[in-house]
Image (cartoon, rainbow, N blue to C red; front, side):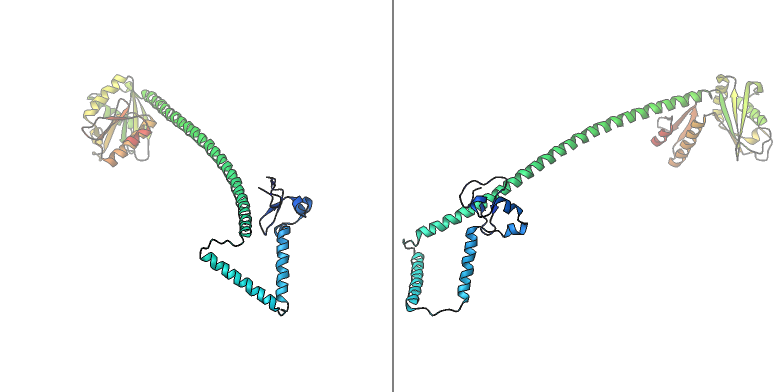
Amino acid sequence: MECSDCNGKLPKNGNYVHCNACEGDYHYNCTTLSERSYKTMSGPKKMAWKCHECRKYKSSQESTMRMRSSTPRKKSESEEYSENESFTTVIETGDRMSRGNDEKVSDKSMEKLFDQFESKLWKKMSKKLTDIEEFMSFASGKIDDFTKYMKEIQKKLVAMEVEQEKMRQENMELKSKFKSLEVGVNENAQMFNRNKMEISNIPTTVTNVNEVVAKVLEKVNGEKIEEKCYDIEVRKYENQVNAIVQFESVVQRDKIVKKKRAERTIKLGDVMNTTDDNHNIYINESLTPYYAKLYAEAKKIKREKNYAFIWIRDGKILLKKTEQSRPMRLMAMEDLGKM
């Protein structure tokens, strides 16, 4: 930027005087104002400050207005003639210019006016362009900072996604291992029931449960089994009594289990004298509490979805959705969701 008085370069830091009338910028030593005085001025005073030329122009306008507002004096004949002649000259000059004559009126003054207009316009445009350049540089820096910040966030998100996927895989592996451990523990627990079977749904009115168990075993086996060959654990519930029978060997238990498949249920009237001859007594393999709960829940789903079969063999819970489908084994509570 250049000084409007001496055309010298102005400081880039904005340490110069600005005229708000002509929009010109000046060195301090090109005005009647010192740097200290200008800097101590308030904002409104700085906005109202005008350069020497603008103050002269304003004073000239004010004096002209005062002269016009005063009582007009009578013009002399020579003055009236001069004004009329000047007016006629201006009209004739305008006519010549409108007709495209080659004559030129006040070439130097017009050239000077155009130069002044061009100079002021260029100064204003230069200042505006400088302001725009500064703003664009500032905005570009902010955009660069924002772009850098977004790239950092994107890197962190990618790292988080990788870590999340890693954790998901580890979680799946842990779930798989936990299920394997759970199945193994439950299978080992069920092995202790390998030589046991359960006789359930015995009425609570029965006084001698051991006698009923002995007769049921005799009915299934086809011959009496010595009581010393097995032990009985009686479990009483609100509506029924169950008996856990533990045989001396797995072979003996399996022999009874195979025979009971031919005769799934036994009527209470088949083993004792009672008025409730049609009361059913059930014989099944003995299950651990976990497998017993799993079997009960599976039976509910089987009834709801009308599946074909659900049964227990060698301590394993098996299910067939249809008569033609392959049997599926239920090993954990999670497997109920596959039904």
